[in-house]
Length: 213
Image (cartoon, rainbow, N blue to C red; front, side, top):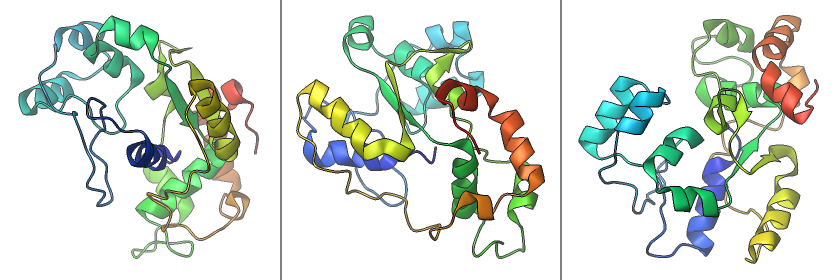
């Protein structure tokens, strides 16, 4: 969440999609999806606990095989092993201090408070819809994707990745969710409380990628 994943998926859809490829349902009024529905074997994820019983049952009943923000472990359980083992799997992570501010502005914020007067610190204390991404690309604490790209260097890192895959890349021009937050340094939004809270709750991401305040 809040790591340009929708923009990257839209870039793939605009440039590299083939009829057999999968594109999950996208939000924000972007009507693009392909091969994302169908039956799947629910037993592996029920046995390893990678998804809740409710989520698995609901998605199985409605044939929601692939959707936004599914974890790598769930996807691994829903595709053949030879596909998982032969494809390059990557994700994007973002400085948690900046990511928290971005999510706040998307959910609640406008000029420092939402229409109900909720400040960033109030939003953090509320503790809902926090963009924890670490569990999405790890399993039992281990990273299970091949690459974790940094959002801050996304153009350069995607250019390098595309080159390795042998596909052309000019720039990530698609902007799926870029209208919520005016350009503002995250340090102008954080308080001492939210800084300490983020350091504590996003320790895994900070340690893995060396992010600092």
